[in-house]
Amino acid sequence: MEEGKAEVDKANNNGGTPLVAACQMGKLEVVKYLVEEGKADVDKAANNRAIPLGIASGMGHLDVVIWLVEECDKTDNSGMIPLFGASGNGHLKVVKCLVEVGNADVNKRDNRGLTPLFIAKLNSTNVREDIAKYLEGKGAKE
Image (cartoon, rainbow, N blue to C red; front, side, top):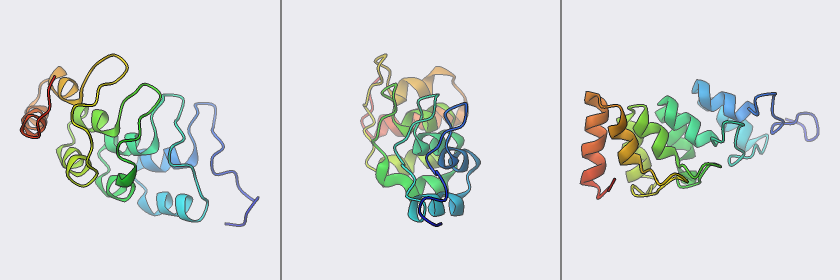
């Protein structure tokens, strides 16, 4: 990518950047290219206030999450971390990656005072119950 030829952080009307789109679709090679070659801002939030790692976590794209996990405890504009999206959408492997590899704070509260454990328990399913048990085992509190 030649410098000055592409605006990798330019957002569309919905606030999404190419990196946000690549994370949403789980396109790891595109994510790597945009970050490594295009110097895309991994902390740039979309209009929905989610950062790229949060989007990949919420969608369950484990390979993208693993690659971006060093940004794990970055918050988006609502005070949420990627662990919220993964917990609420039932992605146990992503939750484990964020906690075990990325050292995500299982007791982090968003701007409303909610925790990832509360989000996991909100819409109880077998998968979310497994996530709740896992988080509780890591010391999470509601």
